[in-house]
Image (cartoon, rainbow, N blue to C red; front, side, top):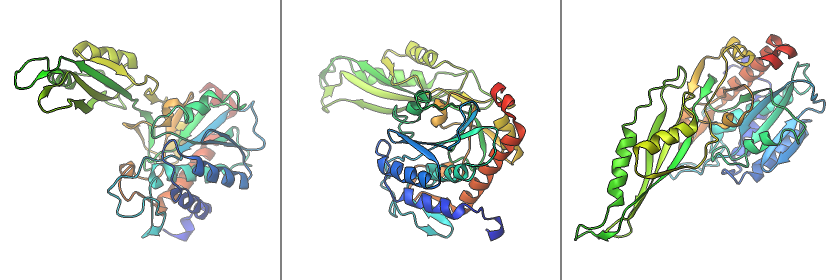
Length: 370
């Protein structure tokens, strides 16, 4: 990468990312990385508030009468898997790659957005910038972005549009699927395996699982395709010689926007004998009008649009949003996760250009009305 193309904030962004990667921040235990981000943002002149392990920052001249662009990514990670051959908290740079858990998902986007945010703190934009480093994204916890969004009024903030930072190779997600996790239980009657008596709950569950597998979700989304439904876990039995009287199993559903979430639950319940209970109906699919200034600005600076099969904190955004960020999503949650320094550089340039193009394309009135 030529030094002529290097973004002036690349060095500070890389250093911040290394500090975060070296600090464990498993979802729900992000206090240490929240402290790092808080201190860093304050040093750069931002006004910072903390809500749990969420970090919320704005400029000293935040104007509540202006629309607000939210810049959001998450600073929690999954647990490191057992296949790592390097330390999960390595953060060393080798051959242009910064290694470590959370480097791609979503440290690259998190740190690029932070640097661009502080770099534009005093820029004459027709909208406010608010930076939110959210907690509990990986577990869809209620103490994460959902808590912040529900507290915006108390924080004297607003959300009119948002950029959600996730590894998309800087492609622009204009839609994303939702998520329903269904806990299913078949109840039978215990018996002795040798006597062939009782009612085998495991057999009943297998019939139900096949019924769910054979469901046809025929409402197809132009961006998200069909709703996907997979049985992913099953548990039954306590002894080899006892007919199990209970079988518990789990369905992972990735809905498109063509179905209401409760409707999906009812459709599945109608074809199985098991009791079906959703863990939550709050993780809804999202999309944005392709004519929104955010999309137009992103496309104007080189972004290609697509529909994302994975979920993110976008699900909690109460306003039009896009999902975009540096890094390849296929590295997320993998052993020896890394992000290219070149990808960080691209992220900085593209985020900054996107925000400046958005300011150029959208005077205040049109943002309000988009």
